[in-house]
Image (cartoon, rainbow, N blue to C red; front, side, top):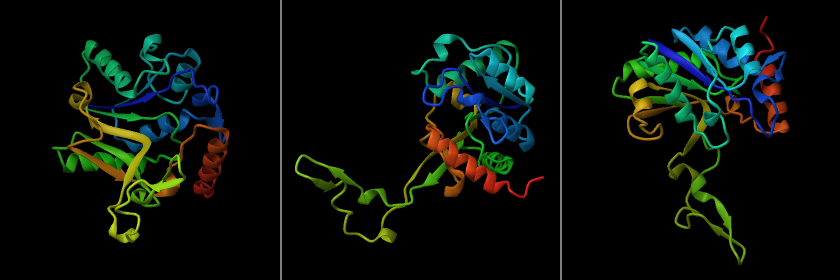
Length: 231
């Protein structure tokens, strides 16, 4: 059995009610729910929330919300891993065992079913993997980054500052969209960014943080551009 779990708490600060704010005509939360359902990768799609209004929206778009998450797992300091473990443990208490679990963030309108299908294919092809997660390549070599000092400016890595870009090791960052892994790995708290993990590298135009009003507007424009031919 495979489950998708979408954490969506009610207390977003920088963009109030971000998870159910209308984005291109639908609540933001609708997008990852519909993407997960359309991917065909999951037997169940769950939303983990502490908020009754978010729970109602989640159910409207086809997700399960078995119960509301406890308040102590919905504050500003609770990590995603703790939320996923809690939901998996709740399933186990109901006699439901999932072999794989995919954490999908609630603000991922640019995520497509194809990307989730590709991640699942990688896990099937390489059973030694614990996780496949979304990532993006840094557009500029981070080895040539600069930092400020008391006297002015200095290279972060002086040994790399004079090297050609093509001679530097490519570097990547977490794209913050999904983390598809074995349930056992989630429950044992095995690191996502470690051995037996693999990055699914996304094109730059599919990677957009949504933490500010400007981010929101940019993501909405990207979404509309990518879906301009959709019926």
